[in-house]
Image 1 (cartoon, helix red, strand yellow):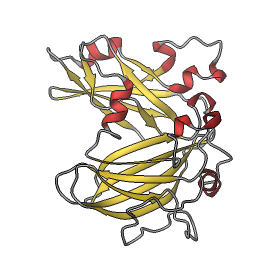
Image 2 (cartoon, rainbow, N blue to C red; image 1 turned 30 degrees about the horizontal axis):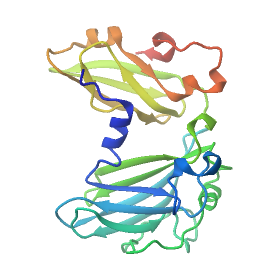
Image 3 (cartoon, rainbow, N blue to C red; image 1 turned 180 degrees about the vertical axis):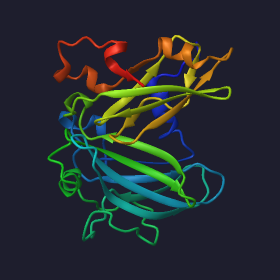
Length: 263
């Protein structure tokens, strides 16, 4: 018992963070939009639940599934008064933006007290070079003044079953650092919702994350009771990702050995 579910890991770094941001259509959540598509204005909000004023930065990035290229749409300073529930509104792409998307930081806070008129999701997809939501995913990040990420929110713009992903080969390396055990993962292509599981009693500090080509992710295994060695963890470690279960993989039964490459 006590194992975290994928949704719990996703919520920990997004909606359950003390300061978080998200984007959606004006009246419907993205997942409730007609035909599983994000339509209408790309309206976003920042929420501060801290008991003190918040100052930091919001970035909005579109990631291409085919290459892992990240297109910066927005990079702006933000400020909100103390919470809980303090909210400011902004657009995923500034309506008057010119030049390369997000080419420089906006030096004043872009937040407004009421929802502004924003470009549509189709506008921001086109600006990022994506035909539609099957080719890209949106990420909204909130950072403190020191640049440290406080919340990361990946937002699919169509139902994940429609994603056009390249086949990904994920590599995993288990190592020890004193009494701590880590798994380092890398991939040759975009791998979405990478999930680590094991028979060992414990949980992974980071899980249900996204791997980009050439960018390794390290996750610590946190044992519930007795310490787990690297050898014990590797013996039952399983790594899965969304691409293994999409139609292009039909007819291939995913298993622990075909899912990963040990290093």
